[in-house]
Length: 203
Image (tube, rainbow, N blue to C red; front, side, top):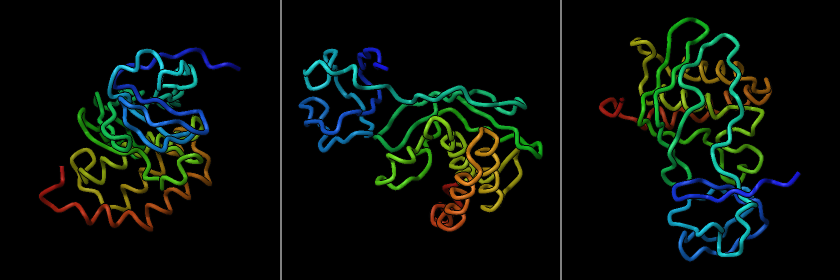
């Protein structure tokens, strides 16, 4: 099925769907590969690199409808602005009511990086999710809980933050084995991010 033509605008994120791409003289991105996300910093003139192949690009984020059978979310889908290809800023508040009842609300302006996936695995596990497994949604709340360390005004532990990460992944339909593996790795390596934030830096 042919992708309909898409003319990217300044500030849009686009995903490359070619095997190779030359450096763009205005955007200045080098070593583009299929699957890379890049932000258009200047007017592309309706095409990328002047070769008329803008129809090969798609905008980001392209999240499907987010499952919410128990109406736990507010503010979904999240609106985001790209910062540098890795970090994103939330355009409006989003909230999630946990299975236990307390609500976690991530404020407008919070900066996050979706799932912390090694770049070499982006092709397999894009940080925002792969379209079927929406772990990127859970990652927004996980990043916030690591930064805020409270839910509904009550202090939480790293273990509790990681448990909510797993809960949200399962709630939005992530495959059980994938959700468990992502939970496992934040349990193994998440202490670095948790301990890196000093008490005075907690939001």
